[in-house]
Image 1: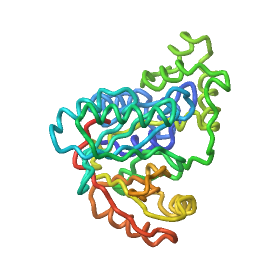
Image 2: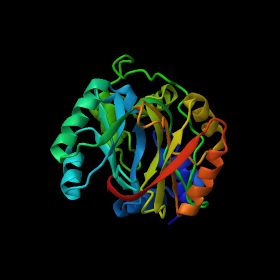
Image 3: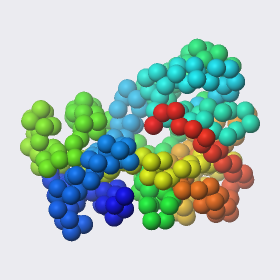
Image 4: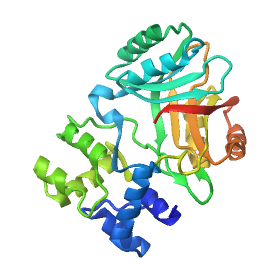
Length: 313
């Protein structure tokens, strides 16, 4: 892999009407080389997509989310098929835990619907024992990989607690979803959207930059498939604490290797309100980061649930 190219495409992608030409200038390469290699990596699955990555909280229909842990002891394949077919399910992992072996995320318009839809899914799967953990606050959601150090890394935090809804600021949510799904690695990637939605290419690039500031768009970059890029391990870290907000702020400052950092609503029998993810080329790196997290004031207990298999990316 051209690590320099993939690092720049993750961390320094220009938000301009000709982003790949400008990225090529940063690298000292020809634009044809940059678009050719990125398209090659896209075809190989190393790059999942390039362009604007949206913040689900800005969309009313999917503005609530939860992490669900389920005890699936029967037909695992059938349960995975049912879960993955559900609208709003994004990630689904088999993880190491003595009870809850399946962990998936689900989005819905309201907290009540999160619980109801999860109940229906679990009923269809024949699962009686599960835990629903709605998001209270997202402190960080930035999945980037340091290809030289072999560990996830970013310093971008979610400073805004409340994100404006696209309807409130008069932006076409359909257009934004279209751009997220269909942004091309080509000379003029904004052109087809400009023609379709009545903007100029420059106006669309400026709009994306503005929406990044508002956090309606999380970022503009190349999203890598960590596993295909060599990051074979990911650990979901669960923290028990009586002061989740303070612990989350301390984690943000001290551990930039975190990709996701979320405070969750928890039931009495599952008192782990803070969750963070770390991706690495081996478990030793993740264990060292966990030890650093255990030293943070307010952390009473930390457990790592390693992924054994991803059923949905």
